[in-house]
Image 1 (tube, rainbow, N blue to C red):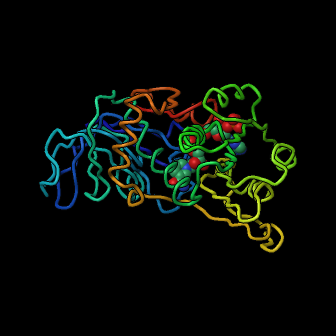
Image 2: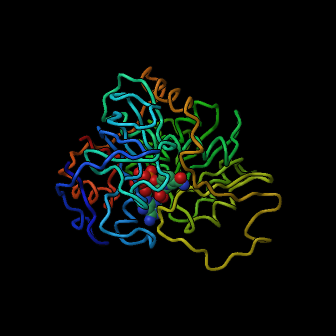
Length: 322
Ligand SMILES: NC(=O)c1ccc[n+]([C@@H]2O[C@H](COP(=O)([O-])OP(=O)(O)OC[C@H]3O[C@@H](n4cnc5c(N)ncnc54)[C@H](OP(=O)(O)O)[C@@H]3O)[C@@H](O)[C@H]2O)c1
């Protein structure tokens, strides 16, 4: 098979297309013939060398969609459509940047759909993150207000759609004035330009603050996000677009407003109910949810795709179709 192998940590060009043997089926694992996969920023960080536990060379890729090639357990039949998500994929063992991958049975999710593979490839990890963050970590309710920090990211765009679908008022942020219209077209009720501090402007719109904040920029804006919530409001940090991992100074009785709550979402496949994935795919197929796919690349264009992701020009999910 052909595979995109990250040889060492570094710039996008450390990823190289090579011929490799197709992995051999083994008990408890499923061999998938990959049709497409989404690109994720966590893969960019791993490639840059920020995942100390990942040993190179490694076939990266924390998600994929495709068809079952071989399943010794008999759970799935050859040709059945499946998604595989996280669980160490592309990190502890070789992942989705290839024509085939061998993954543990428990991270495989079956589905039925007539959508093109390039669309299906955008779904699994995005849906898992968005649904887990909104419904499990933030416990969003109809009628609430939600601030999405890092609104133009693919996770941010889809969160807005799901939140609007669930009946919330959404305020999305971007650093880039030009992208404002994409956020409005995507359903945001308000857009704030984020220079690191949005709480004063937010308070002019919502003097009491918002119910919930989905923090995708991370540590860089976390303290300001905590200033945006009402009493009993929740901030959930799901992303680290800002690239900082550690908060140097944090004063809980001061930085967290009284009765406010701070949580994180670090989901994995066990957070994803199989029927919810099928429901989501059906909603995309019926046109109830529109995915924001910015570009579809071929496997040969993987270096270009990583370079594009790193340039922050994307206005939605990046997909590679095999
Ligand atoms: N917890 C989980 O389970 C989980 C799962 C998947 C992803 N994530 C995380 O969720 C976040 C979003 O991922 P994604 O793939 O959706 O991202 P993405 O689509 O690649 O996001 C791109 C956008 O991020 C913004 N951005 C980039 N660098 C930034 C910086 N230094 N400060 C502020 N904004 C910056 C830019 O927006 P503007 O130019 O418009 O400001 C850019 O357009 C990532 O941190 C990712 O690691 C978490």
